[in-house]
Length: 41
Image (cartoon, rainbow, N blue to C red; front, side, top):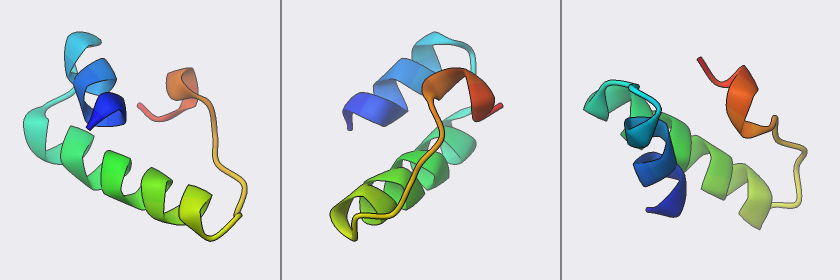
């Protein structure tokens, strides 16, 4: 939720923000590397 809210605050559309947040949290949960916030656009 925190990731999606940050992306929305930066102007990302809602659907994209939700998809990115789900993917990033899933990767973090599995211990996989993720990119930092500015590289997601």
